[in-house]
Image (cartoon, rainbow, N blue to C red; front, top):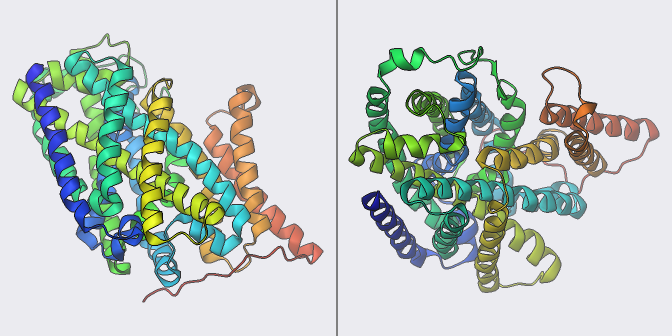
Length: 477
């Protein structure tokens, strides 16, 4: 166990060194925010997939597989399906808008399309949600350190927060894109090598297949809290997540978006069953874990040979770090661009913006640590972010890109209705007695309904309440 801890520390130090070396190329805020808009398909693929295979897709999904069985596959599969829409429809369109008008954040786009009111509302929601998803990554890091070396959750969260903040603050998207290549290589190799050994240690596929802790454990559609219901929460979030969209802002052309994001979607769908099967293997070996999210680190520390487990732990550690720096990217660019430059110092120079962005990265990291210390687990923290993004941002983004009639009033109505319904249902869960309907489903349906209802009222009453600009980008460059 001490050997594993030493190797994880050495691996972390190597990532810091690589980040520091690449950060020498970051001279302007444009380099930090959008990597000079020069990312090709390969770097875009690696930085997106590295961000998407994070705490939720490793520690969280394995815990769901341990607890609920086969239906947990929809946690990652939903992200893959959402990424298809992003890669071939939304991504190319918003990249052209961002490049044409020098937009750096999703907030820039929302103000350009709808005005400062919509930008401000979404920015506030984004800050809240992003802190929770960052906390989820830090909790996953703490679970690993807890199993490997008995490190308390609180200390593990702090150590993870320091590591992630230091190497991200150095170089932003450019640093992340290159470090993500290393992280992605380690995580894919680690999982590929660990699975056969874990299966053998679990007694083979027959022993895993014999598991039947619940009647629906092998039901692919629904079991426990998992199943097709994740599509309503995760699908929209992976289409319009600011962290993913702002990485696409850094692409050099539409071809890079289609290839990079498309390959990312394919990889996610191929990967979707891996954490679920690992969770089942952990259930076969360690059936009495009180915290399901300890299933993956426990399997890698105690269920496979030392060398294999160490490589697997490095893979999981890479997953959490790469996803966390994606969240920091989303949060810090929004705080600096959407708040500081928009409301505090509109004449801020490039050097000032770079400095402010690095300071906000430190503050955001500290906030993430604070939430991680109080949150129950990875999945619970991530679910808050995905639900907020889905019900608030999905409708305004799609309507703004592809509808000439979308107006500021429509967007605000959609955001307000989606958040109000989700918040209300969490406060009064008895208000949703319909079987199978989740707060995310109800909130998304309410957001769509409110958007079209207000649009119809405007048209009937003859009011405009129009957008700042109409954006219908051409289909090709």
